[in-house]
Length: 311
View (cartoon, helix red, strand yellow):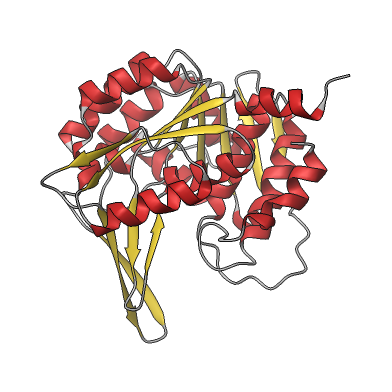
């Protein structure tokens, strides 16, 4: 029988390298650290894996906030490069008429991730899974660094597409899909991507199946908000979740997709059966919608899931 200590060691040994943006949402009254790769990394850390963010922050107060938060969470900081010129990534949140809009600022530190440093970091990590998205591909330097990251990562590649207007185009989407094994997108993104590649089949399932074939994906995962998620793989098998039962009030849906991605990745690395991985990912994402923001401040939030899933 495997002891708890041995089980924990096996879990901790699972390294996930995450390439992309770390940024802060700048509200009128506070700054909130986020960005899809960072949110996913926080969850992986809380569930006992070894996530390593490969990103770049400015030499500024927001970088200090980021490093303090990573220290608090016990996260590996070695992949966070320091940029002497450009600021730590920011998203300005504009409040108006009871709602809000987001402005993703251009030319931030994460647009200038250094390829050489990324190469050395990735080679030393030897990750079991590599995660990336599209936002950090808008700058030439970071695109070159991503090239090194993906070339050096001899492991499955997980694309969490996260299309953020106006910072994507057909070329970025194509090059991302061509380098991916596992792809996650939401229903709206499936429509955008299908239109790019002139996939005119009427049903979402047929569109997803065509993308799997065209880009030789292992699987394509589609999230549907409160209606759960579904997946199609190269063998044309389809798996779906039933919507998670959630009796709590929805506070906001910020970071729900990142929460889903994190638990799905945990399922992949722990070789959970696909329906189990998807249902647990949906359950965790639904629970996150009951709190404010993209990740819980109190790590006790994770305990019921860790106990139930024996992590």
